[in-house]
Amino acid sequence: MKKKTALGLVILGAAAYLSRGVIRGTAFAMQLAALICWMAALILWLTGPFESPRMKRFSHIMLTLIAACAAAGLVSFVWIEGLIFGGRQGVPMDDADILVVLGAGLWGDQPSPMLTNRLETTLDYLDKHPGCIAVLSGGQGSDELRSEASAMAAWLEARGIDPSRLYLEEGSRNTAQNVKFSLALMEKEDLTGKIAVVSSEFHLYRARRLFMRYDRVVGALPAPTPDNLFTRVNSYIREYFSIVVMGAKDILGYSE
Image 1 (spheres, helix red, strand yellow):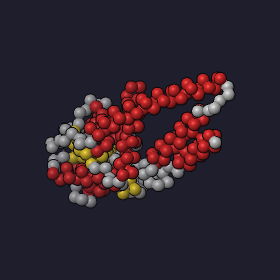
Image 2 (cartoon, helix red, strand yellow; image 1 turned 180 degrees about the horizontal axis):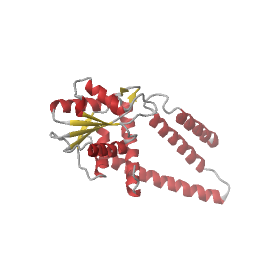
Image 3 (spheres, one colour; image 1 turned 90 degrees about the horizontal axis):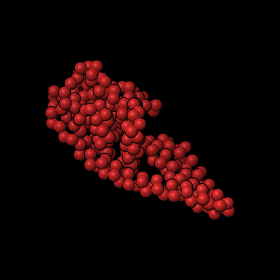
Image 4 (spheres, rainbow, N blue to C red; image 1 turned 30 degrees about the vertical axis):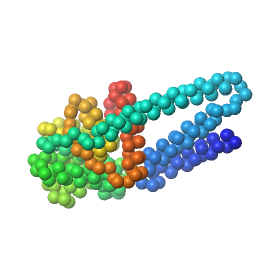
């Protein structure tokens, strides 16, 4: 019975993995579901029973390691989610000279709800601070019809923002590159002054940490996460893994 259940979990995990991206915005959730199914199948298999003493020892060692990793993961999850929630309010700045607006997905050639919320936050600030400019950061994904930066610029221009106030960074593929390439563009264009990063509330802790890689302390303007339970849960859990990866890259000195 255990073997059949474990096999069923393996098949269920494979189905979840293969269905990633079939429904927009579910890729991470499906990958996580697949990983959980496969891990559950492994644990079920490791519980035996085994006739060989060597296999019994092996299963005991593996189950102990899995339990230790799970405990460490739970502690790190609580700690890191605390950091994420602590950064949700951002770092208000009423005199920013430059907004760095981080991209999110497009739906075809239009901003997704996540990105639209970031743009609405940007528009509100630019309207209230006519001397402020914006660096719009985001390249073109494989499922997108244009770069995220160009879609952001079109959205803002359609709502009255002068194109001369917008600078487009269209080469980045992730948040680390958003920050790195935006700073490079600012240096190239000789853009100086106080910086505030605009992103979704759950994203701000990591965004500011990435600026600190380049010794830049920036303000942060939070955009609300779309009011959808699945989107909010998915975003906060995914952000935990992104921060773990970021920390590992910092420790290893990996440059993106």
